Length: 452
Image (cartoon, rainbow, N blue to C red):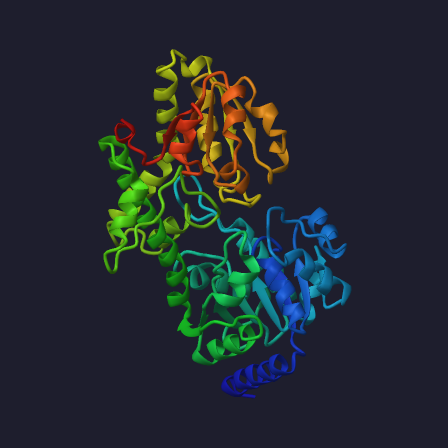
C-alpha cells in the first residue's frame, strides 16, 4: 500500500466514523477546557474517555460531580447526564487510548519567570499518548501554545516514541480553545474555531468533528496559522486592556472619571476602549503574549507587547498605592494596617485563581507589614463570613467584581470598618452612593478632584 493510499484510507475511514458517530474520542486533561469539551462530545453521541493525572478529580467526575466551582451554567447537569449514560468516563490510565480514533490534548501550557514556555504537561501527555496511539489516529492540540510548538515539540515526541510517521500513520492538528470561566459551554457552542491541520484534508476532518459541538464558523487553516491566531487574539486584548489601564490612571490623576470618558470615546465609530481594572489574571492573557513573542524569539524586536504586559502586571501595585494614600489621610501607616481584600479569583463568579492579581496585591501588602484578610465566596480557602473579614479592618480593597460585592451593604461597612475606606479596583461600587453613606471612596480611574 502506497503512503498516499494509506493516508487517504485512514482519513476517509475516520470521516465515516465521525459522520456515523462511531469514532471513539479521548481528551487528555479534564480542566476548564477538557472537561466541558469531553462532555459535549459525549452528549453529541460519541463514546468519550477523559484522562487526568488527578485521581480525586477523576473520582468526582465519575460520580457525576462537577469539580469546577463557581457559576458554570449547565455544566453540572451535563456531567450528570453523560456519566449516567455511560458515554463518558474519566480515568488516569493512558492504556485506554489504544483504541481511540481521535485524541484532544487540553493540558496547561504556562510560562516561567523568564516568560519561556513550560511544556512539562504537554511533553508528558504526548509521550504517554505516543506509547498507546493507534494507527490512523487524529491528534488535536487544543491547548494554547507558542507558534511552532507542534512542529518543534509535539510532532517530534509523537514520532520518536511511537515509531510512526506524522501525516502517514497518524495525523496532527491544532484547534485552540476559545473559552472563559463562567461561559464554558456557551463559548464552546457559539465561538468560532480555527481548524489547523497539517494538510487541508486533515482540516476538513477536524471541521467534520467539531461541527458536532460548535454552532459557529469553523475555519480551515494550517497549523502555524492556528497557533498564531489564538495567541494573537489574547495579546490584542492584553494590549487594549493596558491602554484602558493607562487611560484610567490619567483620568485619576487629572480629576476625570474614566467610565465617563470611556463612554464618550466609544461613541466614536471604530473605538472600543475596554474596562480598566486592578490587574489581568487567568491562565491565558498573562502568558499568551509571551507565547506569541516566543514564536519569533531572536527574530523580531518587540516593543508594544512587553510594554503592555508591564502596565497590566503593575496594576495591583497601583491599587496598593491608592490604599496607602487613603490610609495616610487618616494617619494610618500601611505597616500597621488591617486590610480586608474582597475577591481572590481572577474573574467574577468564578473559582479560578490562576495568576490572580489579588495574590500579587496581598504579597505586596504583607511585604509592607500589613495584616490581610481575604474573602471570596467561590474560593474554598476564603469562604469566610463577610462580617468576620470586615470587622475591625482599616480599609476594604475590592479586587473582583463578584455580584456580592456589587450589592454590598454600605451602611454595614461604615459601622464595621475602623476607617470607612473603600479602594475599588473594579468599580463595583457607585462612588456617589458610597460617599452618601459616609465612606471614603477611591476607585480605579476615578479622579477625586471631580468630587469637589
